[in-house]
Image 1 (cartoon, rainbow, N blue to C red):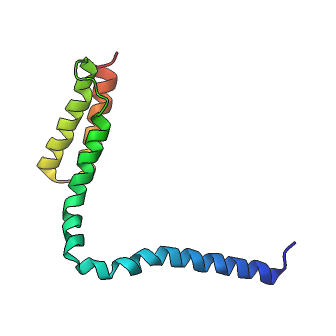
Image 2: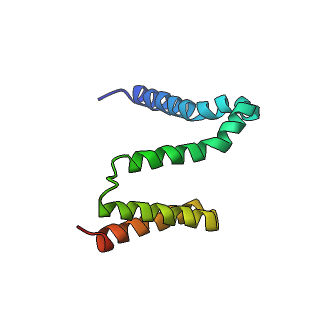
Image 3: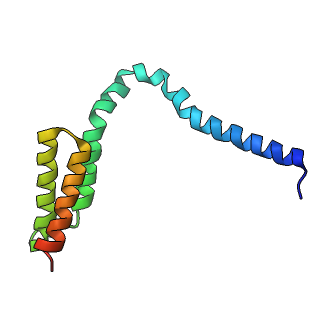
Length: 109
């Protein structure tokens, strides 16, 4: 069994490393917050990420099949909800709910 001092030292080292690794991003990003490039990216990245996710989710969707209508209708619901309420959580939940209902009940195989 390890010595008590050794175990305490190991726990303290692990705690120090964990704290430092969690604090490092905040310390590194503080000077960047005033950067015009970072401010531009913070405005543009959410839309860019959504476009990339959209392309990824719809990349293998066959356009000649009736099952294509469920994801496209869910996409329209998501966009409509977001334009109506500007609430990301409502948009995501509404689009997901629309897709699940349409894919399992309306456009089921």
